[in-house]
Length: 109
Image (tube, rainbow, N blue to C red; front, side, top):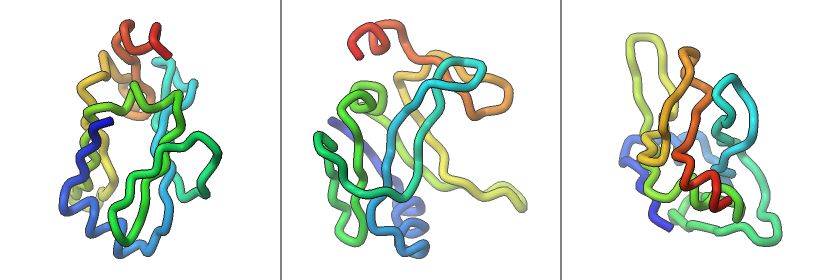
């Protein structure tokens, strides 16, 4: 599985002193899916990607949806947040939280 994390995102995660971050997708929102990005503990079957000072945990179901994802951290005025640049996304809703994936990815999951 391919996952890219920008230097800015790595720095922010280190500053936040997180140990393990669950990265995934879940059903919900007006477009069908939402990203999961929370501090969590390892669960059986997780893919663990070690970045030295922290680890990403990705469940089996989320792996095909996140393959090729770039995690970034952006700041625009007073707004700061982690952002997901995902080549598997087909569309996102106006709120920017809910996403739709390519049908090929959905059918394989």
